[in-house]
Image (cartoon, rainbow, N blue to C red; front, side):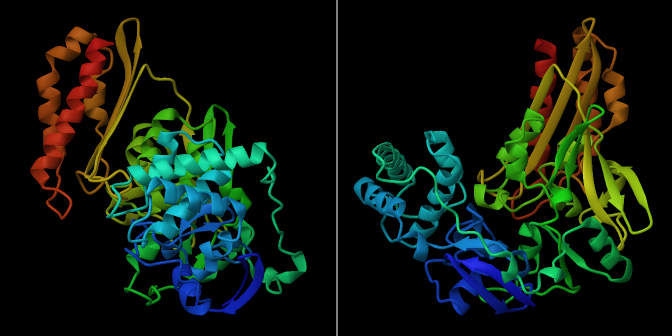
Length: 457
C-alpha cells in the first residue's frame, strides 16, 4: 500500500503493508528512535507522538490510518522554543531520571498544551495518565509540566513565542493516490457488498489483539478497510430529542461535546489514557462486544439504538439485541455500524462506578450504571446495568419494573429481594485481573450505594 503523509514537516511517501505499526515505521524506516516501545499495548506512553496535533500511542496506529495526516515526533519538536522551555522546566523540577519515558512525557505535554494552554493540576495528571514512569514517582513530572506552562505563557505574553502557530498544510496535488482513499459511507458499503473485510477506525483494540510482538507487524485474517476519515461517521447531532453519534467519533471528542450526557462523560473519562482516547471510537467499543466495554452499561441502560447499513438495506436495532456474547454481534459482513442513537432523558439520580487497577487501564474489573427518576414522590423510572460480570452487560427490565411506582419506603422493604435477584444474574469469572468473588462483592456494593441514594433522595 502506498502511503502519503507529513512527517516532521516534510512530505513523505512509503510503500508499506497497511497493518504495519506506525511505531515500527518511525523507528525502522525513518530512524526516529525517540519513539520507544515499552508495552506495545497503549499502556505506557513511551511511543507517544502527535497525530494532527493530538497525542496518540504510535504502537496502536496502523500504516493505513496515517494517509494524508501529519505526524510530529520529538526529533522535530525539540527544535521549537516550546520544547526548550519544557526541557528547562523538567530539569529544574527534577522530572527526569533514567530518561526512557521522558520523550513520551514531553510529547504528551506538547499534545496537552496544543489544546489547553493553561491546564490545572488535574488536567495535567489526566493528560499524563497514560505515561508510566518507574523512577520519579510522577509528582516531579507534574511539577515540571506546571513550570513549563508558566514559562510558555509568560513567553507568549512577552511575545517571545507566537500565540498562533502557522500549521503547514499538505498540498492537494501531493496525494497521487487520493482517488483510492475511502471518503464516503457509500464507498465502504460498495466494498463490503463484495468483500469480507476487517474495518478499522481507531484500531486501539484490534492492533493489540492482532499483535505478534516487538517489531513484528500484526496479522489480520482479512484485508483492512479504514473508515476513520469519513466525515459523516464523525458527526454528533441532536434530532427529535435523540442524540445521533457517528460510529467513528472518538472518546475524547465525546468528552468535550456539549450534548453528551455527563454520566456518559464520567465513564469515558475513566477509560484508557488520554492518547488512547484520541484514537478509540465509540463504535469500536460497541463492535468489540467486550463484557468490559466501558460505554456499554450506559448504552444498555438508556436502550441505545444502532443503525446498521448495507448497500441495499438499513436496520435499527437495540444494543441489547445486537451483542450476544464476548466478541459476538449480529452484524453481517456486508454491514457497517454508522450511528448510535441515545434518547435524551433527565434523571434525578445518576450513578456510575468502575473498579480497576489503574485509571488508564483499558479493562475494568467491574462497573455499574444506575439512573432513577421520581414523580409525585414515587419512582417513575429506574435503569441499572452491570459490566464485566457476565458474557454480556447485565440488565433486568423485570427487576426494574418491580421498583417502578414504589415509594422510598416500599423500595427499602424489598432491598434484600433485589440483591438476591441480581446475585443470581451476576456470573463473574476468575481471570488475571480479579476473582469472581471480588467482582460479585464489588457489584453488589455498587448496587447498594445506588439504592441508598434513592432512599436518601
